[in-house]
Figure 1 (cartoon, rainbow over the protein chains, first blue to last red):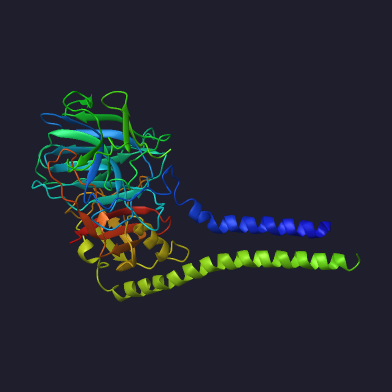
Figure 2 (cartoon, rainbow over the protein chains, first blue to last red):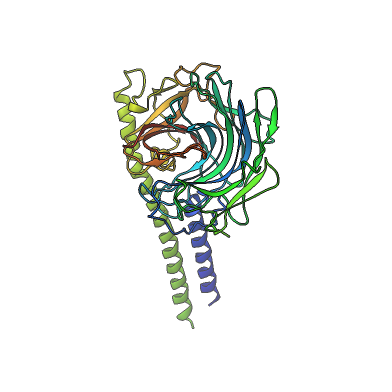
Length: 271
Length: 185
């Protein structure tokens, strides 16, 4: 009987090894935290909404905004417009409806649970506030953090950067548009989602999405951000339009901070 | 006992053969799937050959002054077109791509200007994207939701990308760069 058992054991081991080899490529698709990978209840009530968790600060004449943001691979609602989900985390220079931002973005893709990691993206508007087509760059994965910066000379020239903190290499120029003539009056750093209950905010209760060293410049020096003041309090799950339900008040979106330049975001529903 | 042992060995051998055969059959399916997609790759190569007399691969509404796509034939062993289209689809695209072509991609960072040595796009590893063997993939009829802009804006309109282009390194399979080409109606 021993030979039979040995053959059986050998066969089982070989089959398991072959199975691992043949499915290995799928296993590395998402090197992710994705605590809510099995899904969240997708909302079909609050169309075309957006929810923001992070901070902002108004200035006279900012020229740059930068910071280091941890990558996360959240669950996003894979449902048709106008309830389609997406999740992102970014830094921005803005003025009214005009903006220039850089960070990471995840959109729904494939069958749920959607496994794919986010992409670095750049997006901005023209002087009339209409968005230009966005750019996409490398696909990045948690738990890596990346440096992002958006800069302008306030004379129509802009530059977007992405870099690897501590690598010793200068940040990579992502895009450098010219002739975009508007000047920012504030800088922002936010995690953003689009489906009220079906998008996971960047981060979970054990792996927060960290925003670190969110700084701004006036062209002559760099300053730490003053997020979280009485006139510009940190936000968690603030809706747009404002008549929509607040995800922070619902217990979804959470934020903690250590000062005006360093804060964490996460989805409190995801362990 | 003298008869039992051979039967046991025979059963064990059969089990071994069946299990290995099953596993190989499973892996074979994956190869068949890749091979099937690879035939589209040949189609893409043929398409490229057909336009080899013109200066660049036509990417339609995704054409930009700061990017050129020279026709090429990728050597054996490079990333398949199926893998390239799957990588670009991870942007949120679905369905079959409208364009899949092997190219030598050159990409700059200054919109509206042809790439120069000073304005060439670098990849995540610091290497220039200049005459880079790659797949260029275009999806049309999409709805890819982009971030909605300033958190302080009084009013927002959601924007969906209608067509999107992605460039995938033919050697590594890495996504190099992409852009939205039109808005969905």
